[in-house]
Length: 119
Image (cartoon, rainbow, N blue to C red):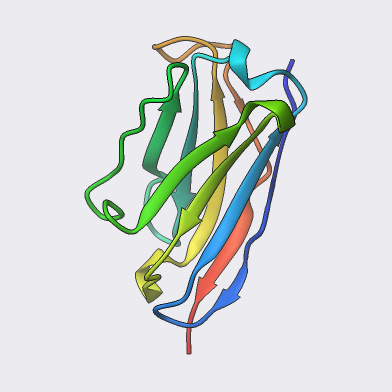
């Protein structure tokens, strides 16, 4: 089993930045990918993007050019740098450990961290 702990959320003004962290209890090198999602009220959980084992990243169109996923293997931590934040970026942000390319019972979620973009 893997424990994931997100941190770094908070209140930020539009146009501001935040960096979220996702700390894993196991070496992130053993994951197929670590992905970031967000959940906004009344909407389905939205995939922001994964960072795959080789370092490849992909992003949803809604965040492309504003958000960046990176990782520090020594710290077993994946980051989500969020710039040029908009009110519609408000939500609970989650990271997910993916054990393989396809959904499996060995995928794990963190507890989430709240991000609020408001003036």
